[in-house]
Length: 388
Image (tube, rainbow, N blue to C red; front, side):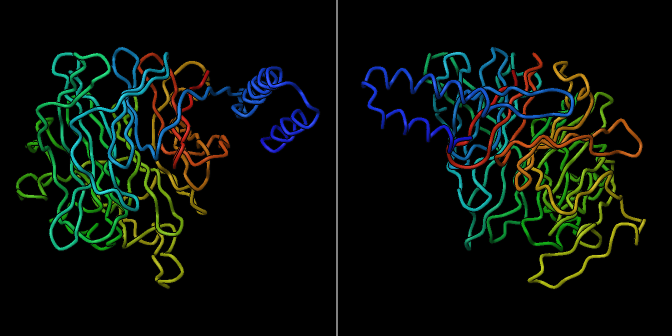
């Protein structure tokens, strides 16, 4: 489609249109084709997305009560974005981040009582000694009192991923609050593999904390103290999406090794098996095989898995009304699959309902309290899309 659009613009110039008429005609052509470029096909409806803005390697987004968005960019910027005016402002006070590989500035969420306390929580990669890095979660109060000059104040450390290791992959660091005000953090195994089974390491775990970073006393391993006390589940690889359904059940989507991407229901104190079991093997250059989940039923098996990989990046449970057939379903952003994968989690067995081809790597999904569905693409000059 883009090639045909460019061909028309070229023909327009060849036939010698005046500068004024050429400019007007060019805008008309762009607008005409944009409406088709932003159409996607669901089995239930023709989806119309509006491109509202572009961002440099964005990673996550969250909606403020006034309808504006906070969008993180991996290089270390938080953008305050107004969808109406399409203006963006950089938020001051963001700490330095290590921007390399899959790491940088990560997720961002609001405290459940944001209207009263203005706390914003965000994850990022920080440097440590001996050329090692690790994820961290801070909170700070968002000050919007000066127009066009947003800033973070009173920044506090909430959580530090341990141990720090070399490399720049599999941080995961998704953030989520539950209905009781507990903070959940997904912690990737940093491509170290075996620490996912080590209960004295954060790597490859689901973390549950109080909003101030202290440890809830009802965590399954609380009596052990230290890192173990913060764990809720383990045996994960690279959990890049977490979401609660209307019943309060936590769902998680993670990238498997070569394939074997997983959608999991997260239960207290369960072991999800990686790297002892998986539904696919390690990449071929390692030559290592991994037993399938069904060979070792002592581990919690995924609700659904994918081989070949979909490369999940994000997860929401859709509660909107614009596409009634999606209500209550899981929506997964796909990187290598360049799609939004819709999963019926209310059906037994759980099954993929459809796959909406987006034509670009999808980094993040957001559903606002007003029911709007936002989609952020991956990479440089990534589009921010809004479902119309």
